[in-house]
Amino acid sequence: MPRYTSSYSSFLSRLDEVNVLRRSAAKKERTNAIQQRAEIDALCRGAIVLLSSHVEAYIKELGEIALQAFFDRAIQRNTLSLRTFYHISKDIIDEVKDTSDHGKIAEKMFRFIDSDAHYWSKSGPFQSPVPSARFNKGFSNPKFDKVSAYFNRFGYDKYRADFYSALRSKAQPTQNMLDHLVDIRNSIAHGDPSATKTPGDLRDMVDTVSQFCRVTDQVFGSWCRRNFCAIR
Image 1 (cartoon, rainbow, N blue to C red):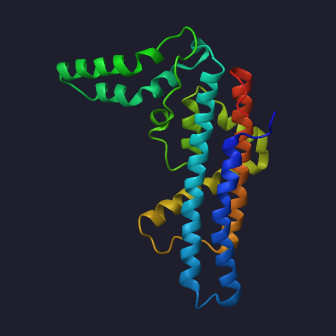
Image 2 (image 1 turned 180 degrees about the horizontal axis):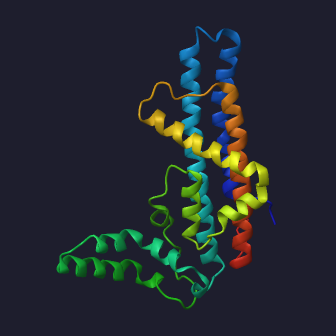
Image 3 (image 1 turned 45 degrees about the horizontal axis):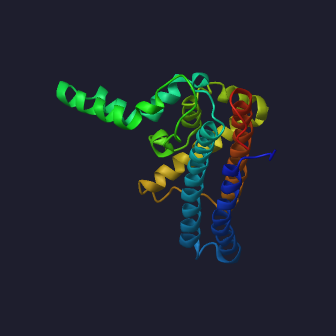
C-alpha cells in the first residue's frame, strides 16, 4: 500500500511552480535586492497565491478520492455519516430552506427527487459516484478550522485531535502558518500592496505547509481505512 494518496503526490508536483517563483525571487534578492524589490515582491506574492490554491485543491482532491473509493469499494451507506448525505445535496436542500413559496418548494423537491433521490438510502452501496463538485461546494480559503469542518462532512470529527497527536509540539505552529498563509493570500486578493514575504520566509512557509498536507494525508487516510476502506 502506498504511504500517501495520489492527492498528496499531485500536491508535491504542483509545488514545483511555487518553488520556481521562490528561487527566482531569491536569485534577484542575492544580486540586487534594492533595485529589484518590486519584482521580488511580485514573485513572492504570486507564489503565496499559488501555494494557498494548491492547499485548497489538495483538500478537495483528498475528499474526491474518498468519495470515489466509497463507490468503487461498494461501501454500505448505513455506515456513512448523515452529514455526508446532506453535503451531497446541500445545494438543493439550502434552496428549499430559503424558499417560502409552497409551489416553488414543491418544484425544488421534484428536482431533488429526479436528481438525487437515488443517493438517499441507508441500504446498499451508492449506485453511481457522488458528484464531488457539488459535495465540495463552499469549501475555500483553507484555514485549519475550515479544513476540519470539511472533514466533518465525512463524519470525521476527530481530525484536530489526530493532527495534534501526530505532530505534537509542531502542531500549533503548523496550524498558525497555514492560517497565516491564507490571511496573506486574502490580503493580496484584496489589493494590499504590503502583503508579501521574503524568499526566505516563503521557503519556511512551503516547508511547513507541506508538513501540514503530509500529516493530514496520514491521519485522514488512516481514519478512512479504519472506518471504510483504504484510499491510498
